Image 1 (cartoon, rainbow, N blue to C red):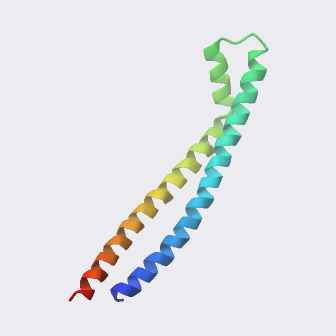
Image 2: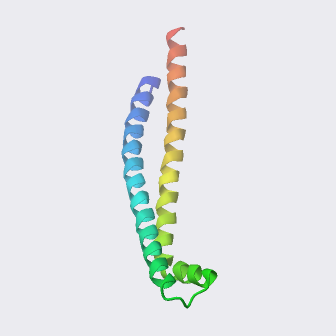
Length: 106
């Protein structure tokens, strides 16, 4: 595979990764929203019961929202991983373009 074919393949891969990253960003945002809404709702309902200290209230919220918090953290990690992969592929593409430009001068 010559440099120009590798550039075309890298561009195709980058386009797919951009789409995936966008999708993962939406998933991460939705997971964060789900967690924050549930936690806030629970905080409000527990606060008005009056039987919790601040720390006990936060502990109850953490326990009750454990699944949502985990889903949020996993979604954020997947999104960050895709962003890191995209930056790596962009660097590879830059290197291939530099190589192609150098070979034209020969």
